[in-house]
Length: 140
Image (cartoon, rainbow, N blue to C red; front, side, top):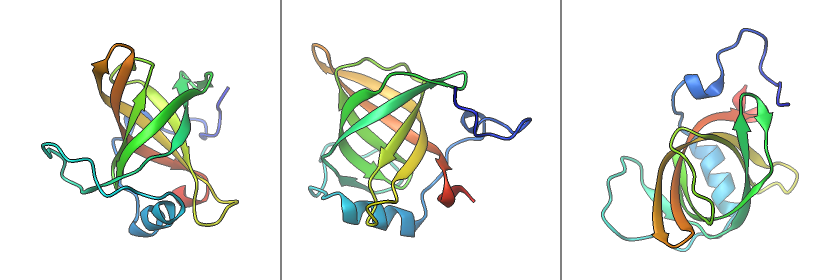
């Protein structure tokens, strides 16, 4: 069970979306090599950077962390990340995402919410997740 919140504190998924600081964003991008963008029609308000890395998302339901889901990142912005996965995800579901940082012992751990899930081909989905809260030192 995931019980880091203080008793009575509003859960992260009810606080609304958040934006990473420029410092946190930059240190994460230095650790992971971007590929320069994804193209397509841009509806986002924050610029995004193409990002290809295999990561795991941890589903979070009612404070309980589920089995990891393997995904490939597509892009990242100050407010969210796009991933490719073989698992259909429901809009509104919550996940924990961990990204490496410049300092090898300092991963970035984020709480995320699924904003959209689009089938690309059979059993392959493009999923957009928004950042909701930071876990650990950056959250203070």
